[in-house]
Image (cartoon, rainbow, N blue to C red; front, side, top):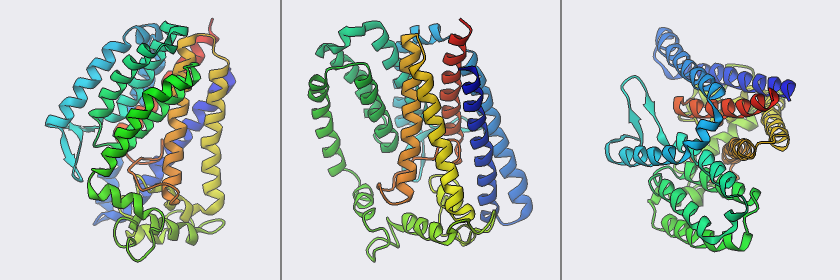
Length: 362
């Protein structure tokens, strides 16, 4: 598996570097002067890259046995951080999701994803067949439910964590009827929460059906409508690197984050978009190969969880920008701008490669 691990890391590194180039490319058109574009933007990107590199190295070198034994402590700490974010967190665009450390903003929900997978992997490894008992499922549901409760302001992360948790439980052989009994009331609560949610969330759900329609194109469907325009302009081979008209006209607000893929589609066309999708599929395929060839049970669940989480995150973003899902602020892994997101993805990749190489040495 060592050669596959090298290919996996190479794709990860390539996507991160390409993402940094694209973010800088986009941000150059959102500043008043060339100097303002060059120095602050480069400093920010290099800082994010350095933090992600340190996080990857730490995850790659950490003792996985210690990580497994510390899973419950990590969950407890994560819940405290999420509670603290709701109380003293920094509001951005009306949502209190960040903790301002002065030198950077941290989004705890990104790291809650990692902790959830580690916790579930440890529980399923320890309990084995007993995980099928309804009382064990209830205890798991309470722990994950608490984290989701304190992440209400971040519905995208909530969906990713809930979906990955269900997939991991099914992968562990949990009785589907019992899982349904646990998931059914949670699903009802989620639907009710959506119905009584903020108006903008309801509008976003309605608008994705026809984002360019007269009712939504200037509001909730604005970004998805202009994403369609960007893809149509790109055609087969694109308009060329740095030549995006949608970006230059700032028709896609915050294009460096959630809607970076339409800019890629406009500048590199269908060929470039397909290449990007192929790289994500390759990471999913190699990651699945890793999981199927791991002998340690904890490593198997952990790697499976992170592979599913990264694939799910990418799929949600790609489906969202082509209007097949409602607009929800979920970045494209490794590509979109965001220090917390890039750091959390780097930790996931580091832990995946840690598990693979540690077993290869045995």
